[in-house]
Image 1 (cartoon, helix red, strand yellow):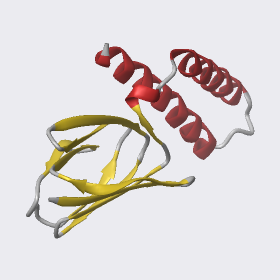
Image 2 (cartoon, one colour):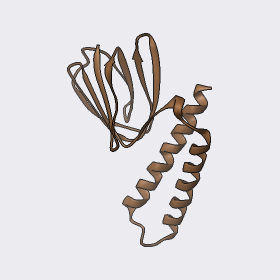
Image 3 (cartoon, helix red, strand yellow):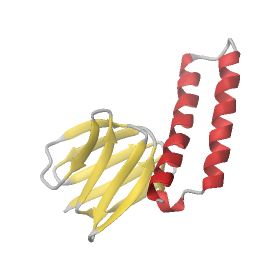
Image 4 (cartoon, one colour):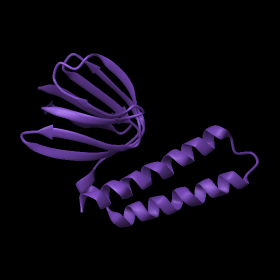
Length: 137
């Protein structure tokens, strides 16, 4: 068994024993099983999959980091939402806000590259939520 802990700026989202977890990373999906070698990796926006008690739970996660040491998996991400709790209307509204804010920032000559990157990340996360929700239907 693995001890999985998922943390966002709002607090602990998940902390339980699991059989395995699949992380979306820059290297592709990484399947973590007990006895996995130590690893520190960037987590990218996508679907984090948790396997426990013969069931699969999917979370839409934003960017962050994952660390595997022994049988402990620590994931710190900007956001994590259980796919079952994603609301289509909320996604549409968040996507529209992110698109409008990004367009406005692009027009503003005072916008920094950091600000543009942050807005693009928010838009990407809402797009991943939308994609993951559609794939669950």
